[in-house]
Length: 407
Image (cartoon, rainbow, N blue to C red):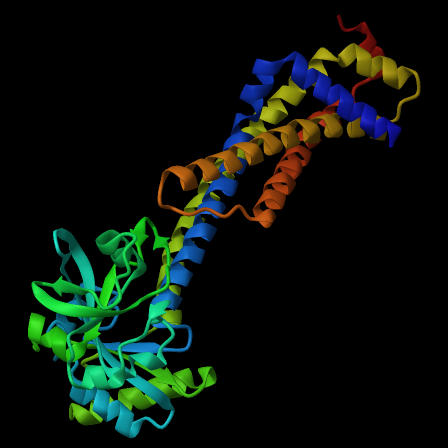
């Protein structure tokens, strides 16, 4: 153990004595490890943010029926352009035929201007919903109350507003029972949703919810709807999707073998598509890291060969005094691994700093993973071991007499 610690001390002293040479030597390792830490932190942070956003929007145990499905190529996109709009009749068909569904809500949304007295907000999301929206956890009311089923059925001019809409329009005043204008039409505020925060720099609290009938009077009834379907139990999601598909095919009189003219989207399918995209980034990361490690390893091997050449007489003297081949090899390998690990540690610190800086200056979230730090350190240790093997073997094979003769 003492011998190992001494070898590490000598290696660190050599790094400190030759700072510029050591920095250039370790540049490949530093780039590789900092790339691992930074990219993994960003991918993890983005995955977490996207997962939260999709689950909060779709619901973990719900799925959406819409006019088109996700497409993988242009031909599919062109074919789906002719799909008919999703209507309230489709929602009725799912309720009638799907035994696994406990709630089916129809909704539509569009951006519009929202105003209260002299204050006006542009491009605020306006959502029209049916009375079943109360069955979905994506809606809530922190103050006041939710729009009641009776108010929705009678198309009352009432609204549930997002936290930031209330803050920007009303300030410190109580927004409840105040009248705001949605696209110029007055609506009475009955509730304020709890604060949801933001995702990728976009606020999740700038919205207004109104009855679907009122929405269609404002923006027209020819817009395709979205149907949110919640099964009776989370384990019945797949069965409920199958039943909804059958119900819609029957309602639309599609022939056997004809493709669906609608799309069914669940949170897991959206996440799968997103994760496929991030997997491509991970593959690119592997290429960058691999190239940087190979370059860094070759540089370390060259430096260690130079170190062996510079210390030929010292090695010859140690062997003449009884040092074994294993002792010489372990010393050189220890110095090589220590040198490589130093680059790994610097890379970890740099990667952590870069990820934190990006997260603080941009909307992109970052989450540094412990396993990526461990991976970076372990990989650099293996690089030092692998590329230090040849210089160590060459040092161990030196003839002590010839080594002592060398100037």
